[in-house]
Amino acid sequence: MISKDLLIRMLDHTYDLESWYAPFKDAVSGVTVSMAVWKPEGSAMNSIWENVNHLTYYKERHAAKLLGEPWENPLDGHDTFQLTEPREDEAAWKALVDRAERAQGRLKAILQGMSEEEMKENEVAEYLYHILIHDAYHTGQIMQSRKMQGGWPATR
Image 1: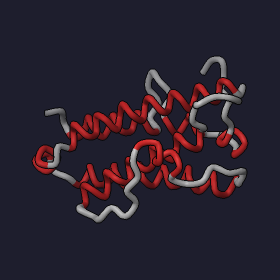
Image 2: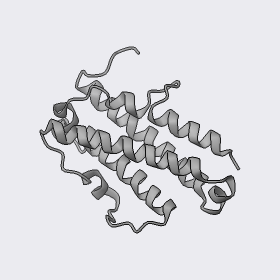
Image 3: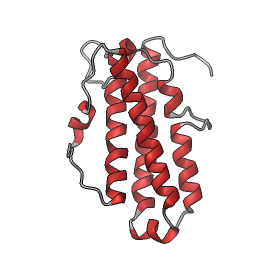
Image 4: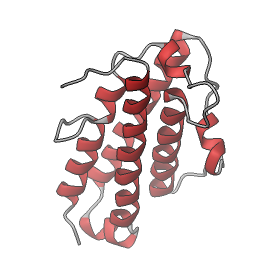
């Protein structure tokens, strides 16, 4: 089994620790509400806001599962992209970004508090692999949307 410390470090890399790819926090940094709700015309592409909803939902759900808390908001698939309503409201956009940060912090704190044995019993590593890959994938979509809007630097 992969070590707990490595899993947590990988979680940090997809969220806010720069590596050879940009983490989520950098991808949403400086995004205005107009950028967050934008979609190319005629496209089935999700907006930045929708991607942040989606990523936040799965971290919140997994944290609740690990703590044995009841999950009051069962959404599936596409519905997770609508966790909060994308709208031209800067405060609501900031609240969602803050919520994503809280979800990340909570999941990380839960993992830090677990023993290696608890992680093994709860199959944390396998699910966390999915979270990591999922975060990297949708973070790439966020950066692509920013590039299409001219809001991502050509070089970093």
